[in-house]
Length: 178
Length: 178
Image 1 (cartoon, rainbow over the protein chains, first blue to last red):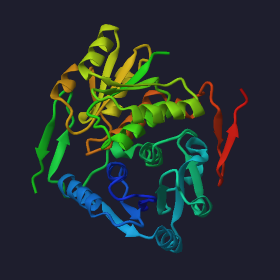
Image 2: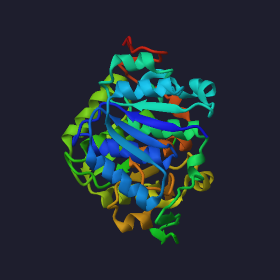
Image 3: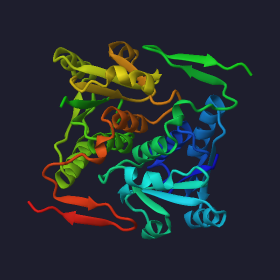
């Protein structure tokens, strides 16, 4: 299966720690291969996500501090395609049939209100999950859910130490035999 | 149609401002009726969301500082049902057929790792959007998308001043005639 990487643009160290962590957790839970946090190194977010991955399984990569233009250029040079999630884009239900071809490596760009205008041009598709002021975390979740055909509910993680056991009204966690 | 209200538990003023704002934006964009932010008054989040609603349309209610136990008790007394979104719960695809009855008023509880244990008992359904460490924003988005049968892409907002026009590669905003 093709690779799926999220490029998070506009991260501010400390201020955006929680929202960027949500972006990473969402990417991992829905079966993406990794997140690149552009332009700012953030060791706190990196270590939070590495800790989750070592306990609950992977593989899942997180890199911070790579210039967004370099990340995009490298991706395009290697033949990958780019989706930019934005409230200004074309509605997901309209675009999905055209892009849901899992032979492409796909980079999904998410950001904030202050996304550089160039991103709208370099993206192969600008896609909206509603044309309303939105959370990039919510947009990413719904995009991945649709794009991966709801496979997040069956996704298997490798090398997990613990596993949550679905429960009607409790909190059940199981140690995984190694 | 039945009412849908999100109850956000565990909000910390300032620290959680951004994530709670994402919860509210997601609730609004996906067509819920409002959000109650439990236990802590937060005028900053309230005014951010009221501003979005007055520009992009509503109706959408946001209340802060109501004790979560009171909010839950009032909801149950009025005949409403409660879903609690948690990584420990039963998978959404399994629970959905049972709960997707839009004649119920539905309260959707979202929170953090430190959710009080009682919430697991008072909820009519504990529902997981993947059994992985997750973002409550992502879980809420996917839950609402499935529960509302993807109607967020057709949702009409009343009394909007501006409207985003879907675009292939630009940012187009239209003034709405009043």
